[in-house]
Length: 365
Image (tube, rainbow, N blue to C red; front, side, top):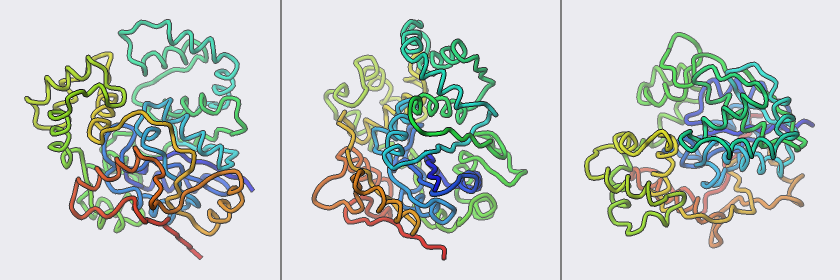
């Protein structure tokens, strides 16, 4: 049977994600971000709620991306997620995109020219951000055009790089409805951004999200719920350069800005430069918030939930893949578990995220 992998945040899960799962084939395995996401912010609802929504709408198995994979730039995010899915035996990778292009060909181009493309990236001037350098690389070696705000397309190219030389077939699925950050409401699909904006509007959420009550009844958080804790971490940490990816320049800029801002977005605006994109600064602030330091990635894979079909797949791969279904005395991943404990501080009604939690089980039969 075909096994299809999907890399996702589901922040929050919506009709577009349901459509993506419907288009995927065979056993559907989702590698999902935990309680902090790639663009550098806390997930709007916790990972267990999002995993359950995915299982109720087509996913067979949901596993967690470790914190140091989930909260990373596109290439590291893609590579870490693809590595996990490869270990779980996927032969296809399905993903949404705004561009109808042959990503399998791009993967072949990268596989054939990897060292040349890496060297080209290194040769580009430092005043360009890494995303700008990456776009120039793809334009030069594969003739890829970038038509505007197409983050799923850019992630698709990162998946093409990560799958180069692997027995995983790339399966792009055209994104439905409005654009990534669109606030349009006159169609059957709303962007995750739009749903975060209207997160308290039951009528709106019901229209664009399956199983909306799961989302509406879960504690919802934003960066605002963590700003004072972030400020405390910055003001009391004697050496911010001990935090993952924080250099002297960033530490100085962050310390200088924190006393004159009232929100995370104001802080991001003050710290960001052409070299340091806003997305990168948000990720840096997440690292500071949770006290993240560089650690090896966990060898085992943390299971968040499964259906009977997903459980059968786990049994089939258990001889070659170590999985964790319940975290107890022995840690799964220290950084992720630390991030989970910080996430719980956002609201008093957020439930336990780590200790003793067992996978969500859903059977639609």
